[in-house]
Image 1 (cartoon, protein in one colour):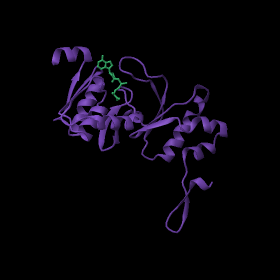
Image 2 (cartoon, protein in one colour):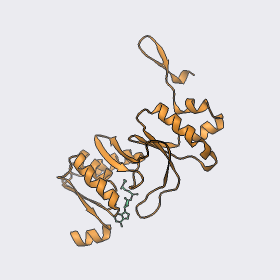
Image 3 (cartoon, protein in one colour):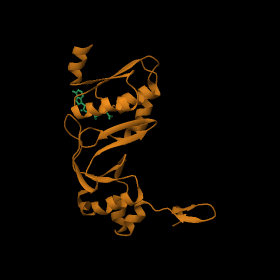
Image 4 (cartoon, rainbow, N blue to C red):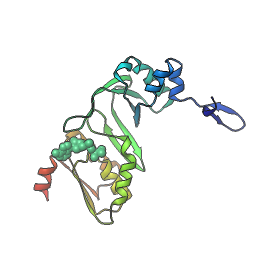
Length: 204
Ligand SMILES: C[S@@+](CC[C@H](N)C(=O)[O-])C[C@H]1O[C@@H](n2cnc3c(N)ncnc32)[C@H](O)[C@@H]1O
């Protein structure tokens, strides 16, 4: 398998990936349906396994943990995103039974709990794209701030005057406040918990 062969100093070693690990246990068709259906957020992996392959969730989880040594727990998404808080149900598959984690991207730190607040690592490029659109000394209103990813990316990568950040979910708000502190963004990011309509009508 040439694509997995990487050169070291004077020696060659094999770099295994999820596909290789699953291929030891499953049929090629099963491997192709399963090997890229996961996200890693800090030390938590979330897998999306098609219903007809749910019996293989343990194998997928083991493969992920054997390749991604930073992953300490694996959860399976068992519903789509729903409700005002935009949450998804997660079923424990392997490892620690916590979904609280710390995720780092572009010099920002985001603490979150994947069962209590919306979070997507797939939006990292979009967060940077938005941050780059912000003008110097602009005031930004982020009405659906979640745990603060956009607000903090803007505070860190642009030069706004203020980033007003609102979220209705008390858990998301708790992490939003913590993330403001973790990223030393207290001077720029201001957080409010509540319905964005009410907050904007009553606070400004
Ligand atoms: C899809 S999530 C996006 C969160 C964040 N922008 C991100 O990308 O991580 C939408 C967020 O809006 C919040 N939300 C829903 N209805 C709201 C409302 N009426 N006022 C304030 N926040 C609200 C939810 O709690 C949720 O955190």
